[in-house]
Image: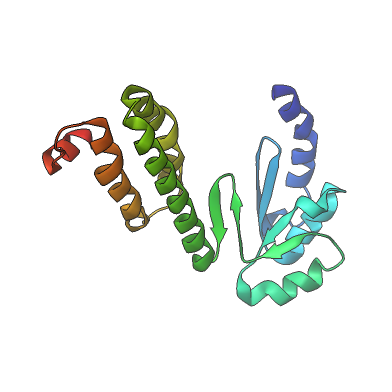
Length: 181
């Protein structure tokens, strides 16, 4: 990984000093690069990449700029969309973000329900898997997107009414939930 990052540095520097730089911002994380700004400036940035892998590239554009984006990037294989996941976080329209978060929470609820069944016979292993692995998935999303607590009600219900009671074989009350929170 360090060698890869070092080898990308000349490209990152070239893109950062290109003309129209003031009209865009760029960010790189390992091999994921992104830029934001005016479409013409992004196209210039794209041309400097000299990429033959443009079928993997995605341009996230506001719906009102979709036609202009298709005209500017029409000769490439760049996918033009109103939203996409970038480094695990949704970018794009509110509808895309809403759908993305709901889909993730639905999957996590299914994971918690599956873990709950296993916890009946292997409670310690399941509690460890929950704390060390599963819960980290939604903690990342909670840290990267603001005002999404309402989306997590189904997950809280799965934890409260399925997972935690499967760990404790006796009656599970709201007092227990407060302790585990």
